[in-house]
Length: 391
Ligand SMILES: C[S@@+](CC[C@H](N)C(=O)[O-])C[C@H]1O[C@@H](n2cnc3c(N)ncnc32)[C@H](O)[C@@H]1O
Image (cartoon, rainbow, N blue to C red; front, side):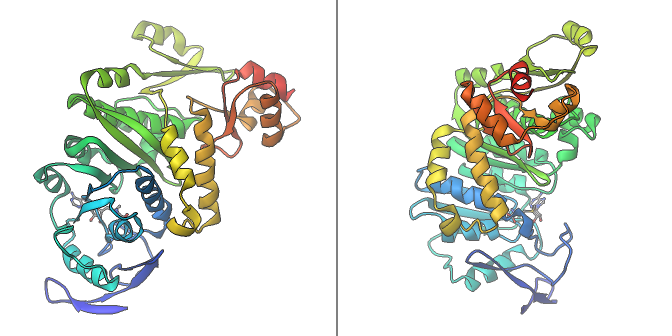
C-alpha cells in the first residue's frame, strides 16, 4: 500500500500488485475489475501481455519504437522494459487519458527502479488517437482497448511503420461470434456464424476488417500470431507496404460455407448464388481465409524460455501456448469437432481425440489440435474421411 496526493490534491491510497518481476500501483484497493478503476489493471489478461513479450523477443528486431496508446496501469510497457532482450527498445511511449496516469506511472517506474533516462521513456496523457497521429511512426503499436478496437484502428494503421507490428485486442466477441449479427454487420462489415466454429469465424472477420483499413493506405496487414481466448480475440499483424501485396491480401477475403453434414469450404460466391445456397448451407463472411500464424516466428517463439524468462506460470496458459504452437502446423481454414460430428452423423460410440488423431495420421493426413475447441482438430482430411475413421 502507498499513499500520495493526486492532481486535485486528494490523498490517494494505492494498492500495489506484482506481475512477474514488476510492481505496479493500481489505484484504490478494490475487488472488482471495472472501467471505473482509477488505474486499469486486469490480472486475467496476463497471458495477453506474456504473448506480446514472447513475440517481441522472437522477432529479431532491434531499436524498436514502441507505442502504447492505451496503457492502463502501464504494466505491459513496464514489463517490456524489464523482460525484452537488450537492444530491442529504442523508445517506448506510454499514453492513457486517465487523469492521474502520468503521476501514477512515474511512481511505478520509481517503484521498479527504472530510470526515465535520455528520452527512451516518454509519458503522455492524451486522447489515444491524437497521441498516435502526433507521432511520426512506430515499429510496434499495442491497441488494447475496452471492447472494440474500431475507434483506434485508422490512426494505428496509419502510423505503423514498414515491417512494423500492429497488436490488436478485441473484447467485444459477442458481436463477432454471432450473438448480435446486426452489430457485427455494422461494426465489422460481415455476417458471423453461431455454431461451434463461431470464434474462428469471428477472429477471421476481425482480421479482414483491419486489413480493409490497411488497404486504404496501401499497407498489407499479414496476421503473424492470432488467437481467441477467454473473452477476447488477439491478432498481431506485420505491416508490409505495396499495392501488389495488398491485392494478395484482398484475394483472400471470401465467404465461408458449411452444410448440414459439416462439409465446409471457402467461396467467392455472388449474391445470386447466395440466395440459392441459403437453403442448403449456412454461410459467414466475408472473412480472411489465409493463415493465422507465421511459421518462422512461431519456431522462434517456441525456443523462448517462456516458463522461466517470460514467466507464463499458470499451467493452463502454458498448455494453451503450446497448443497454439502445435496448431500452426495445420494452419488452415475451419476445423472439425468430435461431439458435433457424432450428433450430425448419429455416431453412438465416441472416439478419443488422441485416437482419432493417430488414425488420421496413419492415413497420411495432417492433423493438429486447435485452441478453438477442446474436442476439435484441424486437418486436411475431408469430413467423409474423418467420419470413415470414426466409424
Ligand atoms: C483495457 S485498458 C488497457 C490495459 C493495458 N493495456 C494492460 O495491458 O493492462 C484500456 C485503457 O484505455 C484507456 N482509454 C480508453 N479510451 C481512451 C482514449 N480515447 N484515449 C486514451 N486512453 C483511453 C483507459 O483509460 C484504459 O486505461
